[in-house]
Structure formats: C-alpha cells, structure tokens
Image 1 (cartoon, one colour):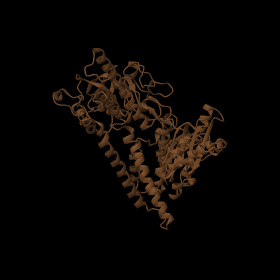
Image 2: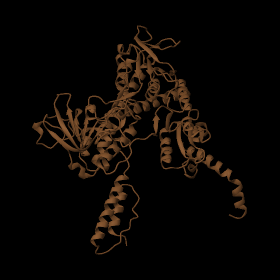
Image 3: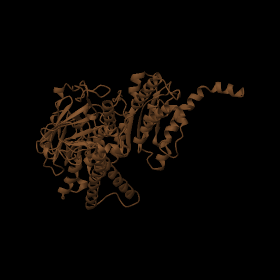
Image 4: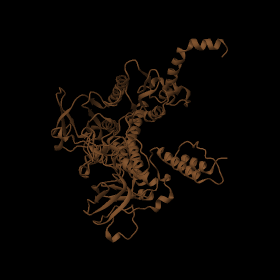
Length: 603
C-alpha cells in the first residue's frame, strides 16, 4: 500500500502544479529511529523541490487564502493612530519615529510591484507596498489600459465610417457628432481606468489581499530599512524588511527636449498626458473643427504607431515622423513595410529616416506649431499639437541606491541585476522597467513574481529572459518573439535556418472577415531539427497567435509537430497547423523510397 507520507508529498506537489512524486516509502507500523530520520529527510527534500518548481504568475484575489487577511500589516501611521488597527485603504500618515517590520518591502506600485506584493501575500508573508503616486503605474493610468481602450473605440469609429462609405451613407461625420463621439471615448477611457484600478490596484483591493500600503517616496537608510516620506505633509516613517526589498519603480518618458531645439517653448504631449490633453484641447477650441486638426507624432515605435492610428481614426489629420529608416525598427522588415502601408492607406502621413531638428511656434492659420527636420529637403511641418513618443528611461533617482552600493548599468541606465534579479547588494532586488531591460507590462509582472519568489522561498529561479513575446496593438496587430530571420542567420549560419511564410490572403478566416489584404505569419526555425527560433505575425489577432508559438518553443516542440495538433476551423490559428503540416510533409517526402519498401513488405 502507499505510505501516508507519500500521499502527503504528492499532495504538496499537486498544489504547485508539479507531477506526483515517485518516491515510495516502505510502510512499517513501527519505524526505527533511522527510518524516522529518513522519512523526515525525504519530506524536506520533496517540499523544497515543490517550492522550487513554482512558476511566476499574477495572483488574483481568488488565489489568496482567507488566512492571509489576518495579516493586515501596519502601514506607517502617526503616533495618534498607532494603537488602532492599520488599514491599507487609507494612504499613510507617517510618523517620524515609528518603524514597522515586514517580511518584504516593495517600492513601486506598477505591474512589477503589484505582482511582487501579491505573490508575497499568496504565501502568507507580510509585505508593504510603497508608492509615491498612483497605484497601478503606467499600465493602468497612462499605458496599456487607456491606450487599448482608445484603440478599441477608434476601431469601432473607423469600421462605422467604412461601412457608411461602402453602403452609400458617406464617410464624413459632422463636427458636432465627432465632438459628441470624442466625449464618449474620453468617458470610456476614464471609466475603464477607474474600474481596473478599483478592482485590482486600489489600496482597498490591496487590503483585501492582506497587503500593507504606504503612500510616499522611498529612500534607503540601510540595506534593510526604507524611509518613506509623504510629499504632501512632509512627515515620514521607516519600514524594515526582514528578508529583502524589491525595487519596481518603472520608467518615465525620455526627455527629448535636450535634443530638439525649441521643444520646451511649446506645449507638447507624451504618453503620460495625452489621454487628458488631446480631449481637452478639442473641448477648449470650438472654432476649429475636429477634422481640421493636425497632430504631429514624433517616434515610430509601438506608442507612436498606436496613437497615430487611433487619433487619425478619431477624425484628426496625423503626421508620423520616425528617425529610424522604418517603423518598428526591431521587427522584421516585412512587418514594418506592411504597417506603414496600412497607416498610409488610412490617411496617416509617414516620414521615416528623418530627425526633428527644431520646434517653433507658428502664427499660421494652418497650425500653431512648426517642426523642422534635420538635413531634409522637405518643407517644415505645420500642426496644432505635437506628441513625443521616443521611448522611456528607468526611474532610479533619489532613492539612495548609490549609498547602498546598488549599481546603475551604463548602457541601459537601469539598475544592474544578475539573472536572478538581485543587485550586487544582498537582499535588494529590482524588477521591471527600472532595470533597463525590455519594457513590457507582462515581463515586468513576471519579474516581480520571480523577485518576490527569490526573496521569500528557498532556492532561486532566473528572472531575465532574452525572448519576450510582444505586441503592438495597431490594426492589424504586429506581434513577435525570438529571433528575426536575419538575426537567426547571423547566429546559426546561412543554410541552417529556414522560414515559413503565409500571407493572410491564404487564410480562410481572414478572407471571411475581409482582412486578407493586410498581414502575414512568418516563422523562423532550424532547418534540421525544425526547432522554432522566432516568429512575426501581422494579423487582427497576432497577439493571441504569438503566445501559442511562444508556448510551443518553450516546451521544445518542433515546428513540424504543429501538424499533429488539431486546431478548430475556420480560425486564424489553424494556419499554424497548416504551416507545420507543410514542413512535416516535406520530411515525409524525403523518406518516400523507404516508405515504399516498407509498404511492399506489408508493414
């Protein structure tokens, strides 16, 4: 019979998603002292292995044990409130003398910080999250959430105009209707941000998970102690970390004003303020019609491309300027060309391989801002507003990192960490955009969970990945992961790399939806082993498809094996099965003579 200890070990492993243990413990009614020691040793090893096999994830409120709620930890409070139970639902009112100890402290309330704190709470550890601004970070307030809400609304508006034009209603919308629509879009953006904030990120939501919250700016006093200063009233308190600190302070827009003469002399937008400024500028100027407004976007990366398309679809005229030779310069060249073609067909003026030299005010009726390009024969560009989307830089200032011995990477300007996300100072970890690594919300969340796991649990897992799936949420989406074709050839050599390419015009679902004129799927793989090296997809659901390929690669699944995995029809994803089948059939053809012989002898 199975020993009760083996049953307990298997229960531990199942709770972490691991395979049941094959360890069999002899069942003796009266074990000897040596047997007891052996049983205890096996139990400890199995438990440690189960913890080590935990994978990073973003815990939701449903994953938190009820017992975690009894750990409503002390946020920094004034001495007058020190005797009352602490509540994370109210920002801290700091005390100059009070020090509270937690198992772990998290500095920064964005994707990485929230995931780190929730991971700690999941395992019943005491944790306090420190945030100087709004919990939720860029993703909730100025990045993913507002941009995808805006893109969704713009797509609906665009589709409506296209249908009107196709069936005789005309694509023009009167100015009053456009303004009414834009007010609705602004309300939708604001409501979505608030909804996600209240549900997942607010201090009240943190309290429900047993997470302490401190409002203020954090500065290290020693490797285990952080002083939090409330910038509203100037009071402060100290937090002590028993096991470690996770720095997750994110990034901010790059200060391009130092490179563009005159930019500081005019009001300009970034991804931080465009969600309010764009709509307010239209409301404040009732004289100029929405359709006559000219927006200049500087930056041909994901943010610049997404917002250019969204603002254009909402009725404004848009000029997109990129200093790179092409849009999305880190993607496959085919993807850059396809996206530029789509934007230009929709009316966006795209200017690549040109750098903005200067910005000046203009008295022209055409617009109040004039942009001059460096070494260009093109005329100056006149517009009403300018949006700068030229990248982000890590937030690493004013935390006392240098005094602690935490180093800044000279190439990325981010916090220097090893592959386990630990800085040179034992017990201080960093995760997410502040490390200067690839800046994606999902990657930051992953790193936050890994950093917390490495601080609080035995053994350590790697938290730095070279291949991170990413998606630019234009329409169509542009998604990729791994190596491009040229990068793969450079790494493995000519002749060792193959590609499979399928335009959307050969995918039935795209034909059914009228999307067959835009996009493709391109998969790069090793010629002999058929192991996937990377992929780029331009399609309406590229972000969903790329995840399947990333899972396959991580699971060491060869590309030709997609032929054996059934996909539903007619879906976009069945194209992956069909493309894999093409490679699989080519393998079979090479062994045709052998198969013919085996068939003749009756096998």
